[in-house]
Length: 604
Ligand code: ARG
Image (cartoon, rainbow, N blue to C red; front, side, top):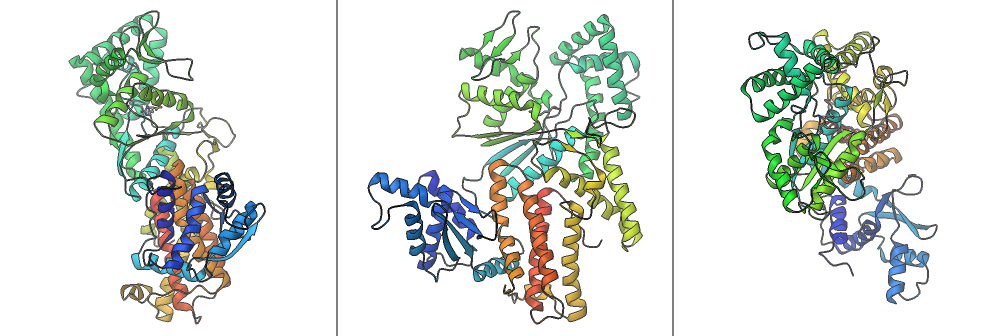
C-alpha cells in the first residue's frame, strides 16, 4: 500500500537512485527485481552491515512486512514466519541481477547481502568517468537553507568556542551546497545589546579622540575587560552605560559612530581568521534586526500570545518550558530572544528558507528549542513545512582536562592557537620531508589548519574534547595528517606509474579508456568502500554531523592502504586497473576533504 506520493516511497526511491550508477539501464527487469529489495530495505532502513564479515548491506524489512501482510491477511502462500518472509524475498531476487550477491537469511529474518564486484567496478568506472563520486540524489527538493554559524561577538576576541561553530558550520554549508541546496551562510554577529552601553561610555572617556585614533583589537579585548570592571564598580558609570544603550538603539549619532568603530575593528580581526581557514560567511548581525523587532512583538500581541510579567516585560510561553522567551524587557529594551524571533521571521519570510540550521555551544539548546516552539505557536512554521535544527557542541578543554586557558589563565586566542598548529607542522616538515623550503609554509598551513578542523569534525559535536596538538598532528590514527599523507601516497603511486612505467592515468581517462576490474579481495573491498561514499553523505544529511564523512574517509584510507600492501601495483599485470583504483580513491578523498573544508596537498 505504498503509493508514489507517500514519503516512504520517495525516500526509498532516492536511496535506490543514489545506489545506481548512472550508466545502468533502469529498465532492465532483473535490475528492477533487485531494486525492489533495496526498496524494501529503504522503507524499513537499509543498513550497512556493522561487521563486514557477514555482508555489505543488511535488510530488516522482512519482519515488518510479515506483520503487515499478516494483519491484512495477505501473506504469500507458504510463508508463516518472518524468516519465511525473508526467504521468500531472497527467492524472488534473480541470481543474474546486477547488484546483489550471496544473499543469506540470519537470525529472526535479517537479510544480508553483498554487492557484486561487477557492480562495484561499474561504480568506480563511473566515478572515474565523471571525475567525482556519484552524488546521492535528495529525497526532498533542493531549497534555501540558512546556516547561522560562527557568530562571534564584537569587541571580544574570537575564542576557541567560536572556532567549533566556524569549523562545523563551514563543513555543514559545503555538504548542503554539494547536494544542491541554495545555502545562505549567515554570521549572526553579536553587534548589539547591552554590552555596547559600557563600551561606548568607556571609549568616550578613554579615547576622546577616538575617530582619529582607532584602537586595535588586542587593546579592544583589554578594553572590554576594563569597561566591564568600571561597569561593575561604578554605579554612576553603569547608569550612563544603560542610557547609551537606549540612545544607540534609538539611533543617536555619536553612539552609532563609536559603535561603528568598535564593529569595524572587530570585523577586521574576524576576517583574518576566516581567510586563514577558508571560511565564507556573510555578516548579518543582531543590529540588522533592530527595526524588525517591534512588528514581531505586535504580531504576537495581536494573536494574544504575549503575557506581560510583573514590571512590564513582554513574554511568550511555549510548551514544555517553564521560563518564557522575553521579547521586550521591562525597561523597553530588546535582548537576545527578541533578536532571534525577528531573525527567524525574516529568514522564513524574506529569505524564504525551507530549512534553518543554528550552530552554537550546547548550552544554547533550550534557547533555540524555545525559538522554534514560538515560531510554531504563532504559525510561521509547522513540522511539515520547514526543518529547523540546532547543532549544539560541547566545550574544548585544555590538556589538563580543565578549561582551555593559556598559562597565564587568559582565554586562548584563536590566532595564537592556529599559529601554533602551523609552527609545529613546519618543524615536523623541515625534519622529515624533502619538499622545497619555499613550499613549507603553505604546506604546513594546509596541514595545520586541516588538523585542527579534522580533530573537531571527526567526533560527535556534543562531546567535549581535549585540545591536544600532539594528537591532532599525529601521522598515525584518525587525523587529518594521516589522511593527507595517505592521499599524497596514492597520487605519488600514480605519478610513478607514468614516470617509471609509462602508464599515464590522465590520458587513459581523457581518452575514455579507463577500465577497472576488482578481482583481488582487497581490491573488491576498496571498491565497496568507495561506494559507501553515498551512504556517508546520506547519513550526514540526516543529522548534519560531518563526522560520518570523517568515519568514511578514514575507513576508505585504511581499505586503500590494505590494497596497496596486498596488491602489487607498479609493474604488475594489473597495473593499469590498479593505478586507476588509486586515482579513484584519491578523487574520493579529495571530495571528502573539500566537504570538510580541508585543503589537500600533493607533495609532502
Ligand atoms: N553570538 C552568540 C554567541 O557568541 C551566538 C549567536 C548564534 N546565533 C543566533 N542566531 N543566536 O554565543
